[in-house]
Each structure stands twice: as structure tokens, then as C-alpha cells.
Length: 258
Ligand SMILES: Cc1cc2nc3c(=O)[nH]c(=O)nc-3n(C[C@H](O)[C@H](O)[C@H](O)COP(=O)(O)O)c2cc1C
Ligand code: SF4
Ligand code: SF4
Image (cartoon, rainbow, N blue to C red; front, side, top):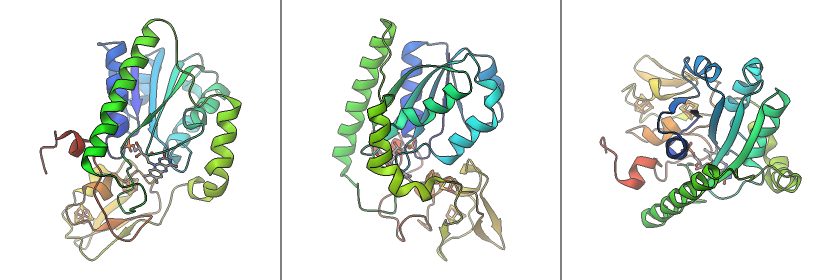
């Protein structure tokens, strides 16, 4: 078994690691953006595949990855895991449909509510205690799902036609423009000190340092990793001010670098 994930602020990483670890203690985990991921997928029959929901869709990097590597999915058994801040009709279905198209067997779908990752919007912001409670509920759900799966039943969240309609009409139709490709809308303010921390963090290699300042290209996949880590809070995307940097480690109190 292999756990594969894209994770901007750490939510999906945690969920995939926990679920995969409960199902198979020998399983390996690999981030989607690492070059070794292809070889690892080829070498494993069963894959727990996780990603955060963006506007009721899978991030573009995830859909791009599945499509570009269409040859590797034939006969793979895949459990699609979508994490989200509030709602996604068919979060798991978004990739399940692609995987099926390329010959994979979709074992099931899982939706897990986690803290919201959009650091530069007040819309879904919650207090630290509320976020801790969300994480406790998520962990409980993952433990229950692992038990069900061990007994042979895979959850089917987000895979039905009704779920597909809910995702489409509830959100995707209205926000589709935002998820049709990579974006060039990342903003880096004059507060940037050129420290370089954001450069290796980006799964798209979309940031470089030029003349002592960070500069963004046009291949941002909206993961919010750089935004949630910049010590100057100099990076924004959907909003104009960083309200609160969202990182899984902050909510569980395991963060070491403050
Ligand atoms: C650009 C963007 C769009 C998002 N859209 C949605 C959404 O439509 N519905 C939802 O429930 N959560 C949405 N979220 C919240 C994330 O899906 C959620 O916080 C997720 O757990 C983040 O996981 P990560 O830390 O692994 O990146 C969005 C987050 C981002 C960054
Ligand atoms: S992490 Fe922030 S301050 Fe450091 S280079 Fe990136 S944008 Fe600039
Ligand atoms: S530029 Fe920032 S938000 Fe965009 S993909 Fe890279 S790390 Fe994620």
C-alpha cells in the first residue's frame, strides 16, 4: 500500500498518513510533487490518494498529474481522500472519475473536514479551539473508516451521481474559471525580505529570488503553502491581507519553528 498526497498546509498529509498507517504499518507515503512518486506508484497495487478541495474541485496540479501519467493507473486500486474546510459535493468523485477513465479500480471515496487553508480570507476562519475540535473529529472519522475498511467495507463518499450534481451545481459551475489551470495571481508585497524560505516549499517551483526579492511565476496551484509559511506574511492570493497563517502543525501544537 502507498499513500500519495498533495498538501498545502498539512491537513491532507496528516489524513493520508493516519489512514494509510492504520491500514498498513509498512506502507510508504510520498508527496505528489516528488519525482520518486511515479516509481512508487508503479510498484504498489493499492493507493490511498489524497488532496485538498479547491472550489469543489481537485487542485489543478492533481488533475494534471493524473492526466499526464495516465499510463500508470491501469488496474491500480485507489481510495480517493478529499479534505475540505466546509463542503464539497463530490470531492472524491473529481479524481475517481479520472482514475476510472484510465483503467483504475476505485475502491471508495472519503471526505474529511479540516481547518480552512485560505489564509487571506476571513470567510471560514475559526478559533484555535474550534480547529482543534475539527481535528479531533477528523481523527475519529479516520479511525472509524480504517476499521470499516479492515472489515471489507470502503466508504463511498462523493462518488454517487447525486454527489456529482451537488459538486457541480453547488459550486463548480460558479467557480469553474478559478480551477481551469494554474494561476498567475500570486502577489508578493514589499514586506518580502528575500529570505528564500518560500522557494523550496512550492510544489510547482513557481517562486524564485531575483534582486533580493521573491518573484512569482504563472504556475501557482493555489496550495497556500508559501502563504501560510512566509515569516513576513508578504504573500497573498485570493485576498489582500494574511488574516491567519493556517498550518496543521499549529493546531495540534507540534510545530517547532513557531
Ligand atoms: C484555493 C482554495 C480553495 C478552497 N475551496 C474549498 C471549497 O470549495 N470547499 C471547501 O470545503 N474547502 C475549500 N478549501 C479548504 C481546503 O480544502 C481545506 O482547508 C484543506 O483541508 C486544505 O488541505 P491541505 O492543508 O492539505 O492543503 C479551499 C482551500 C483553498 C486553498
Ligand atoms: S518567505 Fe516571504 S519574506 Fe521570505 S522570500 Fe518568500 S515572500 Fe519573501
Ligand atoms: S506559489 Fe505558493 S500557493 Fe502557489 S503553488 Fe507555490 S507554494 Fe502553493
